[in-house]
Length: 435
Ligand code: UGA
Image (tube, rainbow, N blue to C red):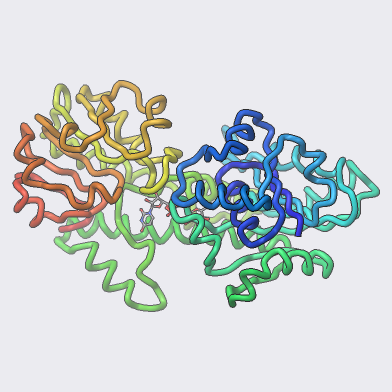
C-alpha cells in the first residue's frame, strides 16, 4: 500500500512510522520545512520512547519518506491520512477544524486515481461528511472515498499502542474503501487484533466517547479521593477493591492531580459542546470538566496547607512538570496551574523534569530549573511530586529529607504513602485520598 500522512505531529508521525514498519510505503508531509529537514536527518522533534530507532530503521529500508510537497505525495497514494491538529477553538470549546478542511481542499486538487481519504485527527460528528463535500466541491472529478480512523495511542506508550492495539476503529461506508482499509491494517488483523468497521458518525463518536469515559473514570476516582480524605478511607485500596470487579477494571483509577495532556481536556470540552449544539447536553462530561478543575485547585490548597499557609519566601522543589511521564508534552499539565500558584504566592520554586525543560521554560517563568531532585530539594521547605517519572519512584528519602529545611512532601501521585515517607524522615506528608 502507498500511504500518505498529512501532518507530522504526534499522531501523524507515530502512525506514519508504524505503517512503514508494517511494510507499507509511507510519505509524511508537513508544511514546516525545518521539521521535514530535521526528520530527513533522522531527528525526531518529540520525545517518544523507541520512535527514533523505528524511524531510522524504516528510512534506511526506504519505506519512509518526508516531504513538504503535498502534491507529489498525494499522487498515486492508495490512502491519504489527515493527521493535522484540532485544537480547542478559542472562546467556545469547539474543536478548530480549519487545518482539517484546508488539508482536505489541498488533497482534493492533487488526487490521481482512486484514493481513500482517511481522517485520523479527532474530529466532531459530521466532519468526515464535510471533508467529502469539500473534496467533491474542489475537484468534482475526484474518485475517492472517505474513512474515519480515530487513533487511541497514548503518549509515552504510542508505539506499543499502535502495534498492539485493543482495537482499530474504521468508519467507512463503501466496499472499495473497506478493502483499502483492510489492506492497510492487515498486519494487525492477521494477528487477531480486532478491526471494527462502523459508519462515519459512529467512528467519530467512539473516539470522543472513549476519551470522555476514561476522563470520567479518572475524575470519579479523584472525587472519591476527596471523600476518602474526609472519612479515613484509602483511595488506593478503594481503587484496587473496585477495579478487581471485571465490570469496572483497575486501569485509569489512579487518583492524582487531575487529568491533563493534549487529548482529555480538549476532547471532553468538544464533546460537551457537541452535546449542547444537538440539544443533548452531556451533563456527566460537563461535570467531569468542572470537577477536574476543582481537583487542581484542591492540590493547591493541599500544598499551601503543608506550607502552613505561608508560601512567601519558602523554597519548594517540584518533581515533574510534564502532564505524564515518558513525554515532553506540557499541554494542559496540572503543573501549569500549580506552579504559577506557588510562584504567585512568593515561593522560590525549583523544578526538575527529565524531559520537560525544553517546553516548560517558556510556560513556567520565574522558576529555577535543576537536573537533580536532591539539589532541587536542598534547603527546601516542601517537595511536591507532580509527575510519576520512574526516577522519582525510588528516591533516597533519608538523603532528601536530611537536606531539607522542613521535611514535608506533597506526593500528588501516591508513590510513597505516609508510612514510608515518615520512615524516610519526612515529618509532614500528604498524598491524594489516603485518609
Ligand atoms: C489519551 C488516551 O489514553 C489515549 O487512548 C488517546 O488516544 C489519547 O488520549 C488521544 O486522544 O490522543 P494520553 O493523553 O497520551 O492518552 O495520556 P493518558 O495516559 O491517557 O493520560 C491522560 C491524563 O490522565 C494524564 O494527565 C494522566 O496523568 C491522567 N491519569 C491517567 C490519571 O490521573 N490517572 C489515571 O489512572 C490515568
